[in-house]
Structure formats: structure tokens, C-alpha cells
Image 1 (tube, rainbow, N blue to C red):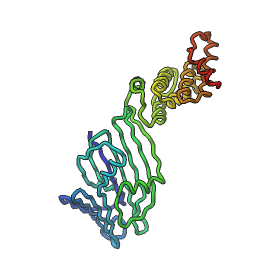
Image 2 (image 1 turned 60 degrees about the horizontal axis):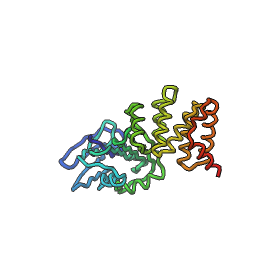
Image 3 (image 1 turned 90 degrees about the horizontal axis):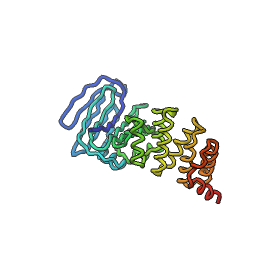
Image 4 (image 1 turned 135 degrees about the vertical axis):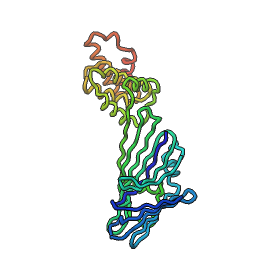
Length: 300
């Protein structure tokens, strides 16, 4: 499936005329509100894309040379460039579209504002979508910066360093899978795709822990523990036990997960609670031998 990168420059609303050429176009309007007609010129030559912004008193050159290549290499994305297309959309954005094929998609937007007779690069947002991920993972980031422009090269690596000091990222999942298919996936692949804890929170929100799902979540924690995903198993089991504190089997699973992380004292505590509940229910004879063995080792 084709995917898109969007490189957008925000400009104030204005009535404009657009002239297209073979490898260029010109947009003419008063975008800095000085009652003078300004222009934005886009040109591409031998793969190098440049925007020239001319106002009453100043001219600005914004170069996107090798920008797409830098995005792909920096993020280790598995994309193949298909085509590039420039347009003005209805939201007053100058949109730089790059169609790509591969494992997912990448979206990026730069905001350019005209403040006090000067242009500033004020914000950037990006979104990466991994369609090979079982739950279709995406990461959306917002960056903020006030950076005055004179002659600016939109060099991806340089801009990333500037923006990284002030940004917020959120993980998202489309979750087009049934709860049963999620369980089967975790059981079969064992290695849960990252990021893991945020993924679990999406499961809890989509399929809340209740009497109808508690067994499945206990199973999920068990599959996580068997796959070496101990932190995820502990995270799930603590959620389960918060609502069902007398769920006996959850305590042995919790002990096993803590043991896998070599947190022996916490494992001892979980095993001890498991033994207590098993004795109360008259099932002491069913306690696995490993529980006693590990509890003895945890004392030393």
C-alpha cells in the first residue's frame, strides 16, 4: 500500500493565484498582511527541492535537499520512494507529499509563521505507522521551537537535534484484532512487539478486565512469562489482582514472573500468598514442587 510523507508549511489565510510549470509553481498573495503581493516559488532540479519566499523587504530560501533520504535513514525505515507531489490544500498548508511503499508510512509537518515582520519555524509534528506490527503501531510526536529564519535548509538530522529538547510523543495502536486473536498472537510469537506497556494499556481500554475477560488476561500474562516478557506479565497480573485479589492462580504466575527477573524477594511474597490461598481451599497437594524450591532459595 502506498503511504505518504507530508512536509507542510503553515501560512495565514489569503486569496492567492497559483501558476504551475513543469518543475515549478508560483503562489502569489499577501501572506504577511502588509498590503503587498508576495510570492512562494517552488522549484526542483536534479532531485533538489527548494522553496523561495519573497516579501516586500526580504527573501527566504527553504531547501529540502535530500530531506526524504535523511528521514528514511535516520529512522531506519524500510520505504521505497514512488513519487513526489506538491499542492496547496484547503487548510492553507503548503503540502509536500511523498508517496512510498514498504512496511508502513511516515508523516511530517513543519509550521512556518510570520511574526513581527520575520519568519519563524515554530513547530513540527511527525507520525510513523508500522503496518507490519500486529496491532498496527504508530508513534505521534509534537515538537515546539521558536527559530527565526533567514536562509534555512530543512536538514532532517539538524532539525531533529533542535526539536528533541522539547517534544512529546504518544504511542497509538489501531487494534483491529479480536481479543482471541491477540491472545493467540502472544502465545505463538512469544516476543511482543515494542512498545510493550503502552500496548497493554490499549488492550485494557479496549477489553476491560472483568469476570468475562479475567481468565484471558491471566492466560495472556502466562504467555508473556513463558515468552520471557516478564515485565509485561507482572503489569497484567497486578491489574488483574487489583480487581480480583483472591485469584489464586495469578499469584503463582506473578511469582514465576518475578523469579524470571531475578527479583527473588518479590517472588517469595507472591508464592507465599499462593500457598496460603491453596491451603485455604484444600488444594495444598496441588502446589508445584518448584514453588517450595524457589521459596527456599529466596531465603538465602
